Image (cartoon, rainbow, N blue to C red; front, top):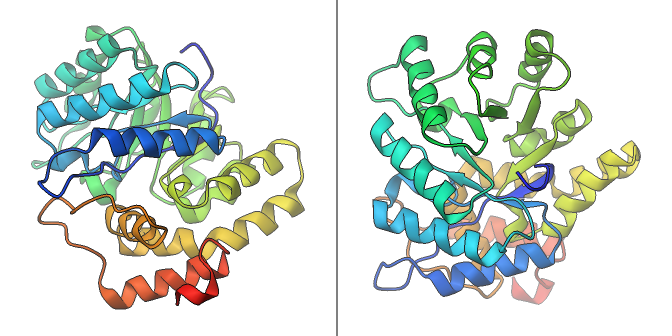
Length: 299
């Protein structure tokens, strides 16, 4: 990568037109907003970007739109996960072709994959591209929980240089450091554990929250970097209710609802996903008022 992947790694939602097509113009606007707010990297086609619900041409359009709009100003980490190795390789090659800084792979499973199958999967992708690969461990969405020992073996594959850990267990990082050494590139993917993970040495925080509270996210990271732990705690606990809410009620639903409350409609969710329930929207509104994102008169 031309620049190190550190700091706030923002995950754009994939917006749709009323006709159900990817809204590339609005996606560009969302990217511009997050870059202007100071995020350190963009990661299209993560969980918030509803990657599993997109066709191959839609995935390619999203990746191309984000990478082109970023134009090298910050690193881009493109999600290329698929059930099959062949499709994962296809999307990884496409990401490299369009100029992505790195790719991210979540091992996805219908049949539970063995460790040897997972290693072969990553090895095949690594041999097909020359840009770095981030291993994404998120059993809640991928159906597999990779043990630290398995991750350590995967990190021996050329190009597999980073780990995004979303199990919500900071001890996983400590175990990886024991197995792989201090240089392991670990990134936090659990929003409610952002403070603990950054203090424990995570290089960055992968999150959809910059759609709504980018400056608070950046403020937290910068406070940790300069050793201002009291400032980091204040920033974290201020944003914690929002972070807990978006995790509890689903990232695409909650980010879509928050953006609409803020005046930006990102279109219908891709079925079978449905909008956030009205009662939950009102809970979210209260959180945003408390954060001074919305005025009290919006209640």
